[in-house]
Length: 89
Image 1 (cartoon, rainbow, N blue to C red):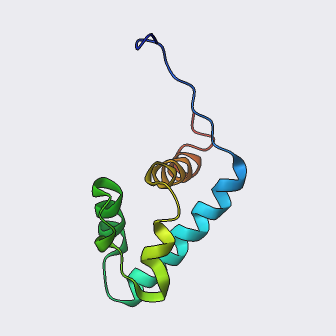
Image 2 (image 1 turned 90 degrees about the horizontal axis):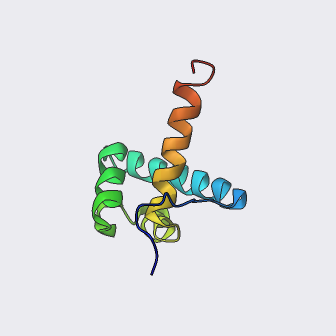
């Protein structure tokens, strides 16, 4: 049986980062072109897993479903930390 009080180590392969960045950019563009608030729609998708938050315009819905939601969160958090706290800590 595994101990649940130990911190788990989570490592992402770097090849995935570029793919996730590309997906986020394309989905953001498609949502913007259709007049949606891309931040609200992407948050809705990430929180619920419901792909109907993402437009099918330019294949954005099928594209975002090719990456895991935790990968999207990780990429967004990494970007925020790198840009908000870079050199401040």
